[in-house]
Image 1 (spheres, rainbow, N blue to C red):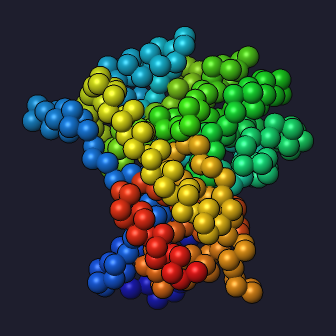
Image 2 (cartoon, rainbow, N blue to C red; image 1 turned 30 degrees about the vertical axis):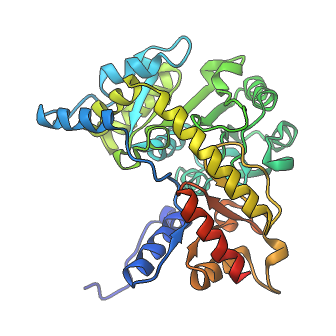
Length: 382
């Protein structure tokens, strides 16, 4: 036992625990106590990992693919991933322990102390904390109507210390899918100012209402300045595999690999065999799951709009309604989320976690029956 208070670094003091994982942990604890808790907080659908992925992973284990591998990733996987990006080879790809580690490493590689990274808000909880851990300063910029990207506001936020602009489409937490012309405008702006454009495309497989995801690298006049981060987690329901990847200029990949050689080394070797199977299997399963998610989105959006104003949610599996009309005097959206968890047994993430106070994030990744039941419980409390 320590007799004195432990001393931790200043960098740790600059960040807080992820509020999304905190809600998930609390919901799990309430379930252990015997409470019925319906979670609309977790960032993954209830779909199973595809059978070909499981089979390939088991085969890799049986064949003893359990040893150290190349730090940038298995060559066959990197070669296959490169095919999705024009002009890329395996040397433009780095496989990471989830997209979260990819982003953390990027800020460590790109940011010196005091450098600024522009973030449209609301934004994912870990962006600001990871930038701070790299000694950088997150600069939060308001989005336009329905949480769409606003290139003019981003332009006004650029200073001499700006190092990068980070965009995330489809967006967590809002579900917005950024319009092609807005993505192109921000890509041109980054190229003009010599900035990196980091494009978090973890949800790129899931868009609704005939909207298409626009890869930032395809609309940039300087693709070498674009860093694309994607993941197997959402796309193929492989969240526990912890596999993400970066597609970028060779110099960036080499710098990331140098850092990764001292942090995690290679990503899980046998999991990468499962990832290769995911890319090689019939992709119809992804399209079918996207169609199921759209039906769930339609149900969730209709029920949400009975209670709160809400943007349509064009992708990913989130809605981000404005709950201010339902708040009691002095109450915040965090207070409302706590009240709904306690009284309705429904877990939601408050907007404060995403720099969007007055809102809550609803994940519609669960089945329609449970989704409807959750809204019945919320409506009863409200």
